[in-house]
Amino acid sequence: LPLIVVVHSFLYVQGDISYNGHMLEEFIPQKSSAYVSQYDLHIPEMTVRETLDFSARCQGVGSHSELLMEISRKEKEAGIVPDPDLDAYMATSIKALKSSLQTDYILKILGLDICANTSVDIRRGISGGQKKRLTTGEMIVGPTKALFMDEISNGLDSSTTFQIISCLQHLVHITNATALISLLQPAPETFDLFDDIVLMAEGKIVYHGPHDYILEFFEDCGFKCPQRKGTADFLQEVTSTKDQARYWNSSEKPYSYVSIDHHKNALVFKKYSLTKWELFKACMMREILLMKRNSFVYVFKSTQLVTVAFVAMTVFIRTQMAVDVLHGNYFMGSSFYSLIILLVDGFPELSMTVSRLAVIYKQKELCFFPAWAYTIPSAVLKIPLSLLESFIWTTLSYYVIVIGFFRQFLLSFIIHMTSVSMFRFIATICQTVVASVTAGTMTILVVLLFGGFIIPKQDKWGFWVSPLTYGEIGLTVNEFLAPRWEKMSGNRTLGQQVLESRSS
Image 1: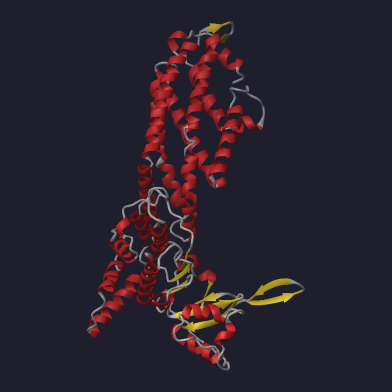
Image 2: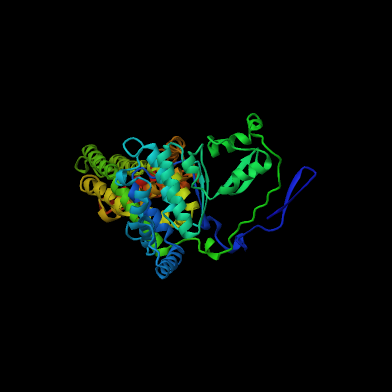
């Protein structure tokens, strides 16, 4: 424990902090414990089963395998027949979780099996109580040794709360884990499931010890619980200045309690349960699933791109534009229009990224996966989409407006990938839909202004910072250095004259 010394209104902390005999830098505290928040953060496109499956896959089985196999061996030697539910849990926790066996068990215990294949979506998904149970199940499906649960009964009825706490009691007893749970006015039958009670009042611990001795402790302190009074209600009122007097009964006695477990399995010494390749595959499969769930967005974007391409074809028709300086500006305008379309095509990434950020940060802090395991798959899987969008636009506009198909296609692909990455970056920085849309709109405005077409090339930093600049340069050079623009006009070709007129 740290030694805290206060001198001249300044707070100094000295000493070392250890847990189970190990210093904090010797193991991974974030992986050895898990915080179950009262806020329900889940990706809305995923179903309940898929959410638990992904959590189980990322967390692995830890030391469950060794512990449960040892328990099973001792039970056989002693001739003990285990409870069917506990036996099922032990069987599903011994092997690696590629299947959904353990997920099925947790779904059954938490009463989520009826909505296992329902999405978490707020509008047409699971209820608030089911979402609360899912938040709890997301963590208990893993092998974490210490669970810290904050008001997990919010939105639940007493029977469901009892079922969840009962499941946690079995889990703690089987795996020698620790669960610190705060509940709001628990029912008597739920209260009786706890092994130890931590009672706090006015920021201080009044009692920390076994459940069976708490009433005896307060009797020794001079307070007695009436026979028909619930223990939980008594504990809340006996620490209240207003209600304490009614329970006064006898004199007080000192109390001391010692209880600690130094077993090494209470700690986790590896930050992530899976190998780098397994983490990559798990995040890749989830990203593929999310892309399937958002397939309407991508189909709509492609359809929209085809429609806009047909409109552009009717405006910029190559057969109606001569190869001269006057019409050169039309060709340049068509190239700039292509850049605009491909740039704004990545705008939907803002809302889709923001909707997942809170969940990604939560899972990252819980050591489900590192940042790269989420970033790389999400970036890689956008490549085929960018290729498709670029191919659609280039194919439709190539024969009608410009020439140089493959270079045009490559440049369009790079611009589209830049757009997608840029909007994902903006969403990651801003983290809210309103801020992201505002910042994204301003970014588009700045990028267009300094791209080199609306305002001709200036020796300003904005020109070289804008990603549209390089796309504009690439597309115009690809077009105006083509053979059909090599006709001489004076001492320069037509293509050179057009480029120079735009300061390119």
